[in-house]
Length: 240
Length: 240
Image 1 (cartoon, one colour):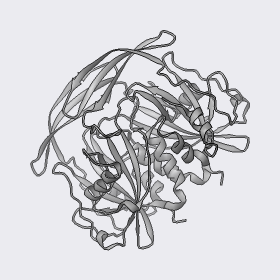
Image 2 (cartoon, one colour):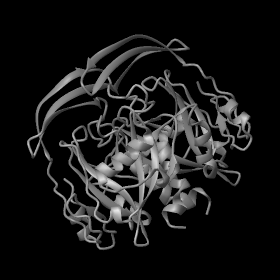
Image 3 (cartoon, helix red, strand yellow):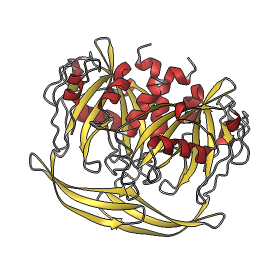
Image 4 (spheres, helix red, strand yellow):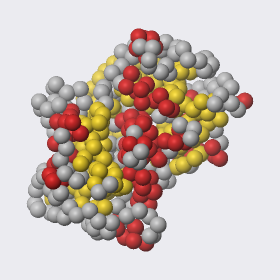
């Protein structure tokens, strides 16, 4: 399923990753080919619980060297048949009066037993593209409107949220929202009748300081924190 | 539990967030106080499955306006008593021969039924600090050594991985690894007997192009992708 080495060999414009295997740690620009098949022999998969929203499974696994174990995980039961992912996360930047804000939401999460700071997000509906779901969730959860042409980037493939525990997955849609447009003068949320969501705007260049100031008072979603860390330390990563 | 407004009022050096409530969408630098109590009335919590690694629960909830529903979620059963989070994710930057690389790992994930590209990470052991767990996991999963003084940043609080589905949580530890140090000349992994992990080094400034080139061949963990998006679009977020 994975062909990093092959994939990259096809297209010389793509930067080659450096693969360190356990036995060879030389850094070179020629990636080592990695095995593509599943390294486990799986058996006895059992659904141990099925609910309206998720099902829990257990499977036995055996490594190539003969070690055995059991894996337990919980998957959503709601993914539309035609969709490769369960949901979408919206990385939205609001441009308003010359300033830039990340649009975040605060929401009580029962599994976390507390308030969480997250990206606007949601599950993909039947017969909906990821882009459509992103624009809809942004509008419903925050009141802000954007159009397809405001989408700066969309990821592809399957981004797992917690790959050791669940198949729950999403794609990211990065949207620039025009806060000076008339339709965004007085944004009005359209929440489901069980949702309680507050919109929190954070100036992009103050986002790291903001997260540090609230990290002990609200549960900051891992994706939000890693995104802001990527932004904050970008110059350092570039050696600047 | 949350006191964004109070928290910020205490320290005037902290940037104030802008809170848009559903009824007021004015942007101002004075945050609106948000309610802190749980907006749901919870009842009938039941453990519907308990396994060695996770337990699945179901709880009824009722909103303040009287709407009712059921929430199902799965939590890890392995969090040490003294730890506020389940695990740690290591954002490691390798500096070697004048270049900078993100240290990522490739791992087969049974819940995802495929190879995943992730940060080095792991569960926190009994009587271990988050920093110690980060250095240990980096060493075990990638072979690279670092010391406490190489830690550039550590987050606090509870970062939920998939807050609508699980309480599974972590903190991030950002580490600069000296790839030119003698102890990192020939990094050797020390994997658990059931782990199969490959180390993948990606030049920081080519990480976005790399992720785009492999996103359909490997499942890129959401946190990895959002981190790289934060890095890649940093100048745009800053209005540069």
